[in-house]
Amino acid sequence: MQPELAAKQRHSSLAAGLGVIVFKGPRGRGSFKEDHNEATGNTWICLEHQQSCVVIIANDVRAERAFPRIA
Image (cartoon, rainbow, N blue to C red; front, side, top):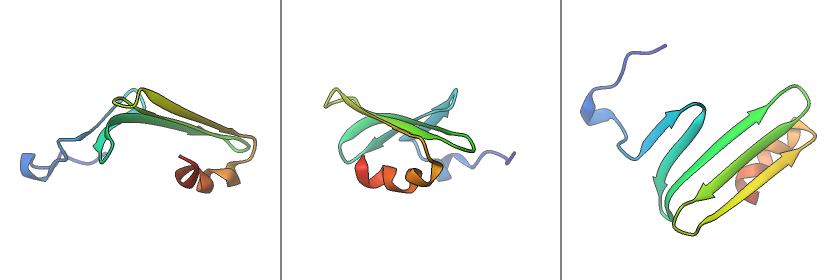
């Protein structure tokens, strides 16, 4: 656990709660969540303005490194 950053150092467009990360990026507001265990890797990413999401489910954690390129 780390102490909170000073207000000027915080990213106002980034927040997290209950394991869901919300952000504001070049394509607008969005959210994502990742999960994995010893064998599987999963993620979902949603973009609010586009009203679209992508869900990626892999049966091997080694697939996770390809998730950013896919999304």
